[in-house]
Image 1 (cartoon, one colour):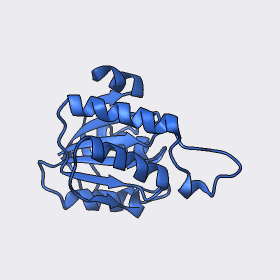
Image 2 (cartoon, rainbow, N blue to C red):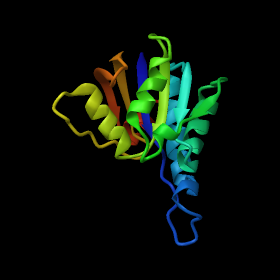
Image 3 (cartoon, one colour):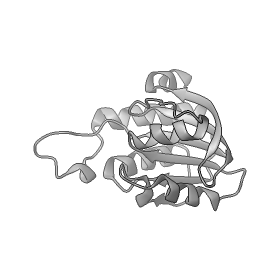
Length: 163
C-alpha cells in the first residue's frame, strides 16, 4: 500500500474564529494546497481512497487535492484522524483496504508525525511535517500498527517545484 500523508494547509487563526474545528484554510493555505496538487498531478498520482479528519481545514485540503487529481471516489471523514483520535482505530480502517491501494490521509500535527514515526522506526523517531507537507510511506503491514518504509518527505516548496 502507498500511503500519502498530508498535513492540512495554513488555516485562519483570529479572535473571530468560530472554534478550532471550524477554522477554514486561508487564501494562502488554499494556494499552497493547489500548488501541491499540481505537483501530484505532474507525478501522475492516482488515488484509490482519501481519508480526512472531520475538521474543516483538513476537509478543505482533501477537497482541493481530490478536485485537482480528478478523484471521483468518496472522501471519507474519520474521527480517528482528529488531533486527539486513535491511531489504532485508523490502522484498523487501513487494514480493510486492498494491499495495493494508493491512499491519501489528511490530518494534523502531532498526530501525523507520531504515526510516521511508528511506521518507520522501532525507536520512536520524530518527523516534523510542515503545513501542506507530504510524506509517502510504502506500507508493509497495517495491524496492530502500520509498518513501512519512508519513500518521500516533501515540503510545500519542494512540491511547488515539481510542476
